[in-house]
Image (tube, rainbow, N blue to C red):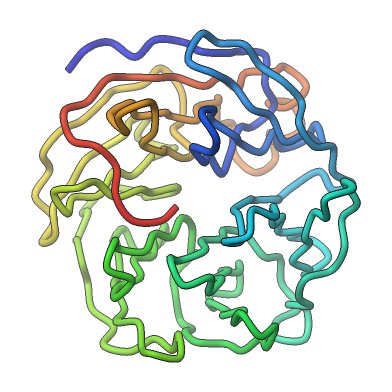
Length: 274
């Protein structure tokens, strides 16, 4: 495995990476920015947002950007003129903060929250809870056939899979991968059906197959918050990394700008969503 190269530094806590229109887009927690960086490291602030953290991003099929406003319990939509409007009110489902988002190939939006639930925002705008009891939900991914949702359970040390029904409902809950000491945060899938997960306390990014077998490990010098496959052929793994000093140290981590985006070439391209 080649050494990761640094694309950009001086970030707060980089999160929610997405390969979009030839660049990597991601949230810069604590600094109220959504950034985009190209493979040469040229970085641009593409959207400014009113919240500090958490806020995560994905796109509707028509190209409009969605932003999770975690503290407010709202899913925001960016209109062509740049304004942010409410796409869905998640607060009525849970009073806790909302976190990760994934939009599948049919335009259905899944958002998870710190209270351990997953909400579905259907293309018609309706919102409902479709799963609960998840031990600190983090990243989510949908397989390329739109049939399976995989959720990272941080406190559960596992990746959990659900079957996706015709109406977007979830069923058939099962352990997709027991990660033992692994603490998964952001995840992505590849074309061989394996998953990459970023791990904050263990300072690494790991590729696993269904069942839990570890295939590859990329050691990091700081916590791994999320990862995403992208690049021209989908074979660049981008890793969001920052120091981790515990919940009480988040403000200092952001102030000290320890966040960075890393890139490493891999053999298997990305697949599915995001």
